[in-house]
Length: 472
Image (cartoon, rainbow, N blue to C red; front, side, top):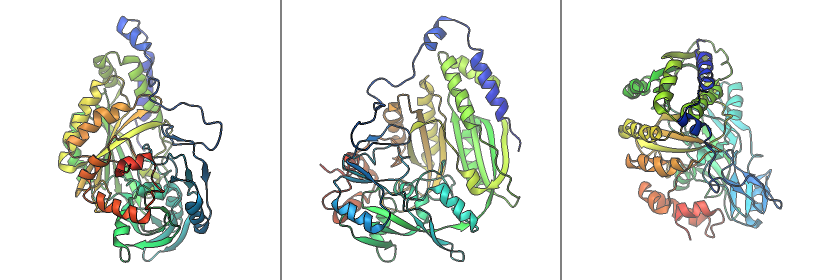
């Protein structure tokens, strides 16, 4: 492997230390708190009575009557029939929207886990819905198989990933739910249904991306692929050069994405391509240290965007940062330690780079921004509530540290993405309700009608889903 990441990390840290000269604007900025104002984030204390739940970032909280973890479908069916509602399933808690919070019952599907059966010849596997993506990747690797793609992190459950249309990157690669060829669903009445495209076509198209609104899925049947090795190259580029080349790069690589680094003039391009070379285990990532450096630039030089950019230009170096070959699942997913809140929109491909440029203008107007903006490419599909309505899509994700004010992601960037035809990621922050979403999704009413048939009393609806489906 060749890398300049250590040089970058040290250079940025050194730049932050060198910022101690005491001039007026800088002194005012150095005393600035970046913590979110009161009332924006939930209180840190937990309820002293009953159960407590929070999502990964800490933004979503719940104090339900109970959190249960059934071990069998029969036990799950009894709980659904008798437990106080609303009932909401939970996986790993990696959604940022309020899909889980309820005052009723949270159903943890973690015991429905693991590889249940497989056929090497057909590449069909059956897996518990509570299986984590990383866990399945390891189990598949043991038998010479792999998932065709993975998202940025692999700690999510299959059920949570599919229900929210979680995706990786690659113009020729669909979101993860397109692996699904069948599933088992426990409904509000306690019935257990085997669902596939041949026998239940509408329920199949609704259930692949369901937001957990149709019932609780316990098991999936998936079409996977033979295990494969990837070569990963990470390259630092000037932002305008990358934007000019992005579509060509996306078309030239199996997986391609890029990260825009605000107030630096630089971006990082990441490509993955299938390789016949032997895998060499990837060294520990230094992404968190680089993120610390970007935050240091913001904290010390945010008072002057011009100086902040100049300091960054003296530390960043255009060229290859990483060149390594490893098993696909080792490279496609990453570990994220620093917690954040996130919003993401999926834009028609032809509008993608215009939307990226418009988002960059918004981010660079804000001196408090330091988190990279992630841009990925996804092939479309026709699942009813899939946000990937176009043949090809550009997905743009924006982030804020989980201790800082995230509202601009929704209020300032959301309208920009919608102006270019974007649909929001179901598991990431947006402020849209039934009217907006019905206009975006031709099958929204079909989904809602099916939901009402399966759950006429709205047992699986919490406040967030009621807003999405226009109930109450």
